[in-house]
Length: 428
Ligand SMILES: [Zn+2]
Image (cartoon, rainbow, N blue to C red):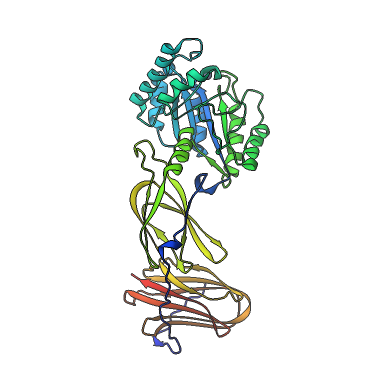
């Protein structure tokens, strides 16, 4: 690393005006991701019956590997030990759903009894674990018919069957979600192939697991589960792994969401994202792609998580995750650059803008050329200058900016005498 600090000189030959850009609101473009973070498929792990090893063995494994899951519990079997474990681990990533009160055959017991099974299990879950528990259910023995579905619809957002199959997001049968079931013979390679199939066909894979390590029905070896979880992590760029209720919330919110631009101009976007739904339940963040002016750099968004920046032809887009709760979101550039044709050099790193007490810059020179880097104030007064003849490779620079006052500055990088980049920077 080379450090450079050159005293103030007169910055000759630099005469820049702020570039004039105008965009009107008709240019405002947004898109809500069909799947969170524009991934290709969804995987939800579900555990039925609430046997103790699901909480003592599978849950710690899931948490260690940061994989969310849904637990469909038989509420009569939730003893004080299981209840304690659930309470200690309650979060958006671990859903507690209903598998009825007694694991009843909902067709056989008659509609009054079925209604009680569905309602009482939901009340138990809400009472003990809050209103985001008991949002979805799984049918005991996988048995249901149309009259059962009507009862389920009154209390649940979705219900899982025992499959086998995958779920299409475009023709979703939310009260008959299909699943791929694990049993004691399932090998990791088989389970991983379900994930691959879901990715290739842009489907929602719901996995169903009962027993773990010799306890419960069709017990799965926890080593098999661990290996499969590692595979899900490996393909996480393509797979959104989430709970059943979070997926359903995402799909419902994204259908109802409207994005309004309130005062969008060439220096700031003020937007509101609203799903017009109950925010205490519909609390799933949506992923949104918005077109921004191509010369916006170091873009910041309030009240949201920025995911990435994308380029398509000459256009620039940002992708971020935000709650559709009608809050005001502000998107603004840290700096506005004047992009100049790429010419054998590449800006690898530049300090965040605004910058505080120093400015770091890293530049890669692909073929031998003369490089000239200057930082000056808006009156053209030179603050730093670094010149390198026949440069090649990486140039790392560190400007100590403690002594300079806050305000606007210009960074200009020239390559073989012509401008490569001119950037407005703010010192705070
Ligand atoms: Zn069951």
